[in-house]
Amino acid sequence: MKKKLRSGYTTGACAAAAAKAAALLVTRHPSPVTHVDIPFPDGSRHKFKIQNSKFKIEGDEFIATASVIKNAGDDPDVTNGVEIVAEARIVQQSKSAKVQQPETAEFLHFCTSALVIKGGRGVGLITKPGLPVPVGEHAINPAPRKMIEEAVLEEISNFKFQISNLEITISVPDGEELAKKTLNARLGIIGGISILGTTGIVKPISSEAWTATISSSMDVAKAMGRNEIVLSAGRTSERAHMTEYHLPEESYVLMGDYLEYSLREAKRHGFKKIHLCAQWAKMIKIAMATPQTHVRFGAIDMKKAVEFLNSIGITISQDREFNTAREIFDYINSSLVTRHSSLFSKVCAYAKKYAEEITDGSPVLVHLVSYEGKIISKR
Image 1: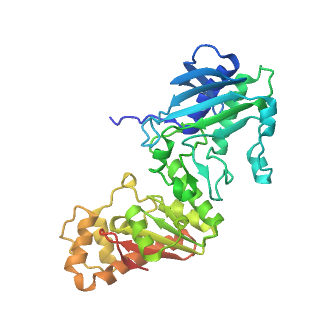
Image 2: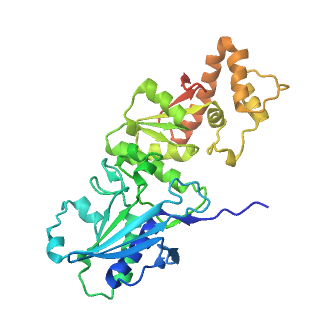
Image 3: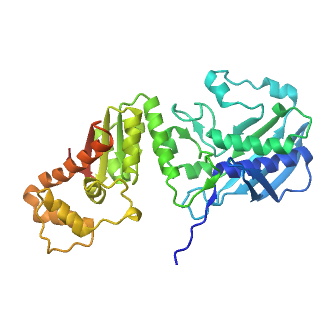
């Protein structure tokens, strides 16, 4: 019997729970907090264990910190097990009045509450336009920001001090190192991870994180004035294209296995040229009109692949057995060496045809990348 995968919590939900615990400490300063429950966007409530909490007084300011260890369930998330820390600080009115913020329309739309929510160590800083957080702010997305706000306000609503005197700072001690394992730098998020999540829940092996990153990457590319986008199935394909074409970094989007979604997003964003890069196993799936290329949506059937190749003029004996797509590639590359380039071009042509059906005619330039990491055919 197949084991049911466990859901987990987003960095935004963990930040909200830590913030509520810190707010509880700073307003009531009792013994350390062990658990809190917070509201989620769907109206449900969830209970969180507080890892560490403490209260202190510095001069005439009350300061409390609390942390939550993120549990991503069975989702392979780089932030699983990371500590999310919140500091709550009650500042003097005179000091808080001196804090000046840029009064742009974008900033005022972003900061809708009198409660001050900031990013600290390990939370990335936004340096490129196109993301849901303004340039110059820390990467705490609007939905997590709202969760933090609601969790804190329900705790302090019965207290009489000015909400504007309360500052919440979210930090991630290991955030800077973790960010190196993400695409944050390409998106212009520097120095740490992002506090993310729209529902508060992480679904195991969910497409939500992938598709959100794809869309955000395109938002940034568009905001930076890029007219071309490069969709790559993996790092090797991406590096091959970078080596040959040298487009700006923000033009590159790792689509993974989300081919159809990525092509439709590229069309929606209005890019004038779409590049599609993949190695053989992915490319033959695309040529065979497969919208999702991950093996969990169906491993490639070698007999059907051979039938397809024969149907487009690449003659392979039906009696020959192949265990992997790589074996088919090697056979074409060696046995049909005198004309393998034109044969690979045929596969690229069919991949291009399928891709342009998805983009409704917007031009797609297809690049086949070898297992040595070089572009060997394009259409």
